[in-house]
Image (cartoon, rainbow over all chains, first blue to last red; front, side, top):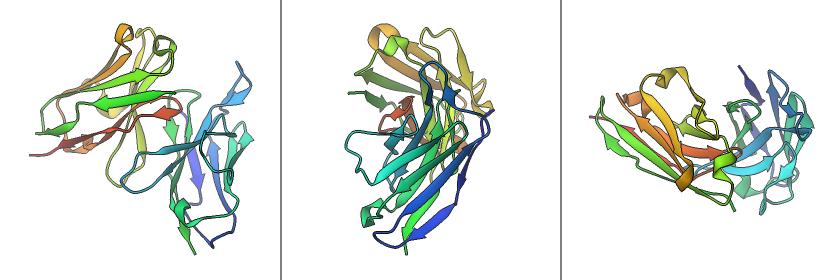
Length: 112
Length: 112
C-alpha cells in the first residue's frame, strides 16, 4: 500500500516569503505510460472542498496563480508558494493517483 | 471541462442506508476509473472505494467492506455509492473523483 508522508505538519511564513511543503511517497508514482508522476496538490480552506492546484506533479491547474509550483519525481515532491499571500492561508494536501488514491496528512499554512 | 455533481447525502440514523449519486460530464466516463473519497469533520481525505471503467473490478477501504457498494452506469455517465448499516463514524462529506479532479461533495450525517 502507498503511504504519503507530508512535512511539515504546519508552517508559518511571512507575507511575501516562500513556503515549501514536502511530500514523500513510499513507492514511485511515475506512470511509465506517459512518463509522468501521478501526484497532485490541493488547497483546502475551511468549509470548502479541496481545490486542485497541481497535477502530474508540476502542471498547474487553469486559473491557479503562478506563485504556486510543483516539482519532484519518483517518490519525492515539493509544493512551493513563491510569495505567500494572505489568501493562501489553508491546508495543503498531496495525493497520489498512480495506484488507487492515497493522501498526505496535510500541511497547515499560516501567516507569521 | 470536467464536472462531477454529487447528490443523495443527508441525515440518517445509525443502521440506516443512503445512496449517493454522481453525475459526470466533460470527459469520457466509460474509459475512466472512478472513486469515492470522504472527509470527516476536521480530518483529511480518505479513499472509500473505486471502480474500473467497465465495472468489473471494485475496491474498498476495509472499514466499509460488506456495507458499501460502488457501482456505475456508463450509459448515463453516473457513479453510485450504496451505503448500508451506516455508523456515526461514516459521517463525512463524500466526494466523487476522477483523479485528480473532484466534485463539490455531498454531506452524510449519521446520527440519532
